[in-house]
Image 1 (cartoon, helix red, strand yellow):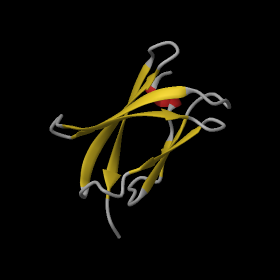
Image 2 (spheres, rainbow, N blue to C red; image 1 turned 135 degrees about the vertical axis):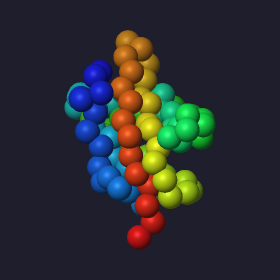
Image 3 (spheres, rainbow, N blue to C red; image 1 turned 180 degrees about the horizontal axis):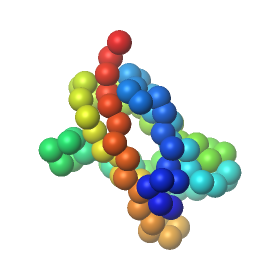
Image 4 (cartoon, one colour; image 1 turned 180 degrees about the vertical axis):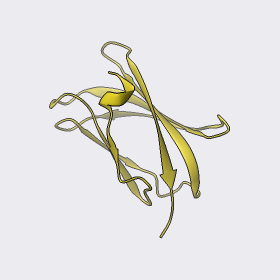
Length: 87
C-alpha cells in the first residue's frame, strides 16, 4: 500500500473519516493517529469492509492530524494528513 493509494474523505471531517484501501476485500489494518507535533493520540486494529475503513474521530479536538495505516498482512505503511473541524 502506498500513500497515494489511500484516498480519504471528507477532509476536513467532523465525526467520521473514511479511508479507501486499494482492495475490495476485508483485511486487518493497524490505524494510528498523531497530532501535527507527532504526539501519539490513538492506535486501533480495524478491518476494512469492501475496501473501506470508517474511523470515528468525533472525540478529537479541532486541528491537523496524521493517520498512519499499516497493512497487517504485508506490513506496508501509508500516512495521510487530515483536518478535524466541528461545523
